[in-house]
Image (tube, rainbow, N blue to C red; front, side, top):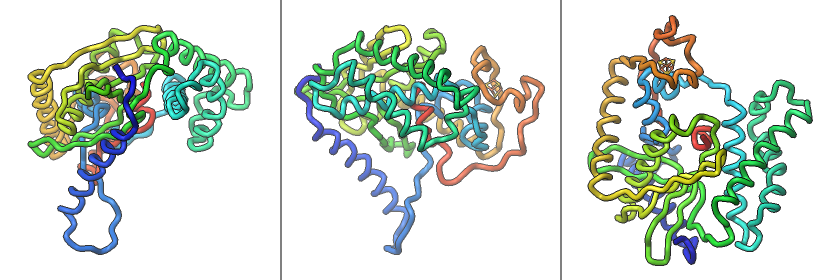
Length: 317
Ligand code: SF4
């Protein structure tokens, strides 16, 4: 399906997103004085998912912005996503399993230089053995990717594509798409790589929520309902494909609007309630959570300018 698409669309998608952001900034800034870019509060799939799962978790992450120590699996996911992005930047013929393996270590050197705190995932960062073992586990995910598809047959329009759109209701949606394939006929496929260690059944509903979020953004940006939403699970070599339709995306859009309104209501009052579930096992803030005997810090008020920004770790689950 993706064969034959070009990178022209990437520029056009990026320009559309940039134009939207620029137009918004221009509307709110009448004078021509030099200005720093102000990012309007927006809903991202990660933060919307947090609020749906547990409003207090949303508050800890988006409002209090409490630091979280990344796990080895999260950082490995970021690394694998980055290697795949670099792989697709190469001419088709060079996208081999060997090249992906060759890209792994230099990519990790760059990422760990940019974010030296990620070295804290290792019990002993100077233990070459521990780092090598972890890199080998990343190599296995890359090998698993090649069992799912052959990148030499694909011409994605974009990788790690930043998308942003404003719904008629004024709600701003923002996110990053792992890969966008566009067929010569205009059919769109959204591809997301899943590298996490969490059981698939727990992650699947969350992943589909994220994919429908991107589908709504693309539908609103381009006027086309994506033909396919595809999840590639690299940890177990499985793929899951889903075809959304327009009425479903319209309903999902209303769900996103309702989530944003609920976030704003909680933001005004500071009433972000805990919602304990089996997912609490993955929460870094149990010691501050009333459901686990903790006390949250005093509510700092609604943050400006943007409580919803996603990190690279958010995007690489
Ligand atoms: S421990 Fe559970 S209930 Fe408490 S904040 Fe985290 S996810 Fe929410």
